[in-house]
Image 1 (tube, each protein chain N blue to C red):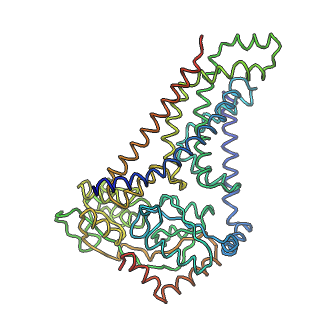
Image 2: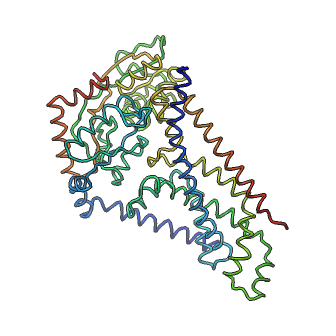
Image 3: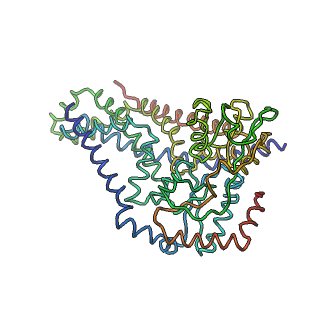
Length: 273
Length: 216
């Protein structure tokens, strides 16, 4: 029995040592060299692998034929065309995306993701390709009035796990004592949260404005307020930390697509204002 | 009519996840079988070091949620070998299942009467030969009922591989439900598929059990 425990401890130490080496690597010289050559790598491979979480229409979803559709998907294909590489899209849970790009399992993330300070520590972000607005939604006839974000205080409220909106609720409603922590609900997907609001299990939902309007149209939710006050910035593409050449190239392409009206056109084609 | 058309479209969409689920389950069960049998053998017949190693594997892996193992293996192991999410997820699930299977096979090895080993050695077989041709065939048969249970558990745990991006039945259902906002239909169909798979698995294993039952 003693021996078993000894071996178990040895294994754990070995595993930790292994993960320590690998964790150091990206910051070390080999990692930095590999990351700054990211653009060359992508061009050499002839394709860019992009992660998304395809349950967030109109930004990203999967149509009945299994194709990735939505604003982000059209945009990344337009970017791929400019890069001269094929775009391979990989569907993942939103929570797994940052880790996957950090570990090099995917080259970039496009998932209506905002460049927050916390995320910026883990990965790099391109310039924003679209500004963000959030919406507070409630069940029809709820009688709730939300004129500014803080009016949500003291109401049961839901948001998607790991999103900027969830972070805003924690910092501005929970930590300030306006809303008890047990009245905040975290959902794996936005559509689950919308259904819970529609069914009266929670009073409010805070999420990205456009998907909120789409959900509202389908479930009959009422949008009480659309605001930029809860947002932290625009939506950006996440790329590995230190991939400076890839960032420069993507920034250039995004600016070009913003300037020539392509992004505007793709937005309208996907029903985004 | 429209309703049935929608239902058929949704069903077709989710059905594409069926092969992924079956693939993940088969790979994971096979990998787990190899790990399980080898570890159980080491546990029962190995020297002190291998006994401890096998015990540590079983204890540690069973102490950790499967989804954590999948996540760790995908990101740690896949740094050295470039595995697709499907293979990384399936192998990780197999590695986890191996720990549970090793307990099943350990029990089976131990329930083969020890006199058989002594007898095999007495007629001049080596230990390896004895395990291979006397103990193992009986142990696998003895393990079948419990193994069938593990098979259905792995089938259901295959839903976990989506954390690394494998689009199996459950994720397909989520995708449909995000689009149509009819979770009842999407998850109802997923439920039917899992039910069908589980029933099929149990039937096949029961048949195997009857066919290979030991007359003791």
